[in-house]
Image 1: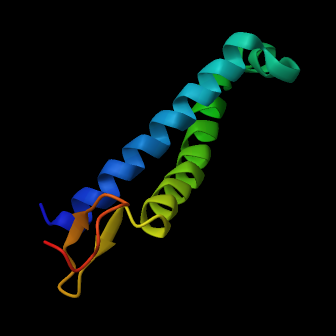
Image 2 (image 1 turned 60 degrees about the vertical axis):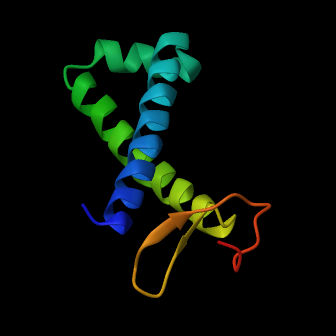
Length: 93
């Protein structure tokens, strides 16, 4: 698998995991009656899956943006994404 694709998939998994945890917490704590609506509705599972999907898209994009903007991952000219520590100089090693 190319490094760039591996980078995107890794951060997408992080984003969707965060979305699933958030929706699970919202249902469990019944924030603003969300859990009650999901449990009482015939299409509650579908609604929860859609919320996870759309929040996952958002969180994945944010996660990828943060990784790129902070310099944790920098795609080289040839498209290879290399992880680097924030304190290390780009030209060294």
